Length: 414
Image (cartoon, rainbow, N blue to C red):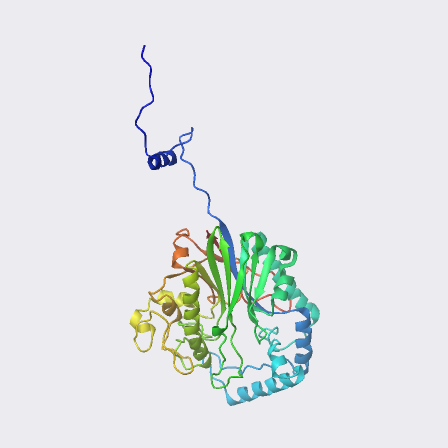
């Protein structure tokens, strides 16, 4: 009688591991890979969101000056400022500064026309502003509860304390940071603590350039704000921007003239001077975290620029290669004409998340708020990745609109 003996042929450990990985379960199905961690990310410009006390102080001053505008009104479609319009704005600024306690205090106050809309000035009350804040809080509730958003980049907010108040019942679950700034508007983040390791925020002051390089005491643009997290064991950075306004489009409209970044218009000159600091910031963040999200209010139709398919030799007015940070003159100006092609210049790969869904009732500015992914992060997302705009909550008859921007969000895989 013979007996079967174990084979003396021993399989290498590495091969056993491979075979084990190829094993099937009794149903004949292969084991499923673990699902990726999904995180909703949003950007929301909240249109001069401050505290109730901020509004009451501003409203008291502005009643006295009849809600005048410290910014000179431009001729529609041309951007031309008449001498009379400039004189009116200067007088408004002088009166507002005097009544608010000086230039420093005035800069911490929303302009008198901030909550007035486009019609003739009306008498606003604390209740009107409370309705706006209630709309902002309800909109944020919707982003968190319905859209699954766990990281929110805010623009046009007064402080982290204002963000905490607007998080309402969610405030205990979220951490908040802001970018200290000498003006009323700044950028801020809120992120859910359960995402993992504690987040770290840092401010990029390079973007906060003065409007007028010849006057170091002139008003500064908003700073940038970065949030670093570790999600599913991987470091990721979020870069929150609110760039200079009024140099938005390369396709003309009945209201807005088409402008490149080398246009002589003052707003374009300021945005032009933000290009090099923005590129340096992105490069610095990318070295420490190849996975990053650049989002916020760009105040520029980078989707129009991408669709225009500008050849490299046309990106800069001097025809130089757009790769790398462009050289600056003594005032910080660069030869850049197109923002998107300058940022996505071949030395780095960036991906705009397209807008694929817009809620019914979503009004306000379009094409200014964007979500951009680094190349490595974009490669791990679904091919059909898209973003949506959520309508802001507004009560019937509300006299101060909740916001002139709809929040934009996307769900990312990690």
